[in-house]
Amino acid sequence: MAKEWISPTGWEGTGWLYPERAYDEDINTGADDYVNDRTWSAYLILLHSPLVCDKVQVYLYPASVNFTSTEVDVYRDGEWVSVYSDGQWIGWKTIEFDEGIVEKMRVRSYNNHFSNNYHLYVREVDFWGEEPSGAQPYSYIM
Image (cartoon, rainbow, N blue to C red; front, side, top):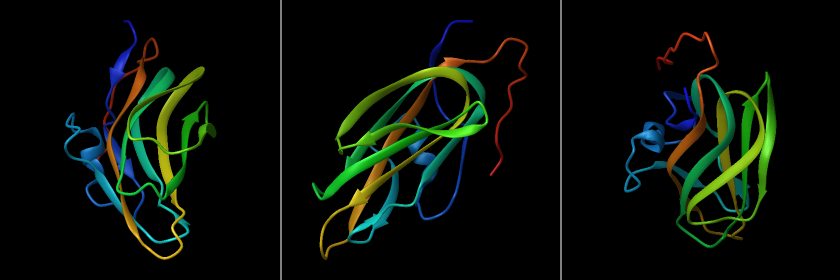
């Protein structure tokens, strides 16, 4: 089996409206977090059965230029690993990292405005990977 873009099969955590829209194959919808001024959004944590994976892609749509930082982590080989910690973007970004067994990713952004709250939308995410040999696929039930 060759690697391909694979959508998450579930999510965990709180603070986000419509988290399932981050993997519905439609960039016109998205998970939504209303982020207070000078704070980080909640983590949006997206799940899949274990994959051999070496990159993820994220489609962000921040409602303001005041989102100044974004962090993306993957749960690789049994621990959270930071794979992106830098500025904000709008649209798709592909983030590469050392290959391992990945079963989660998480995304958050920082609203740097001094007094206004803004929406942050994660419109779509995908894992680049394949099932490990001999693995039995499963889905998370929320």
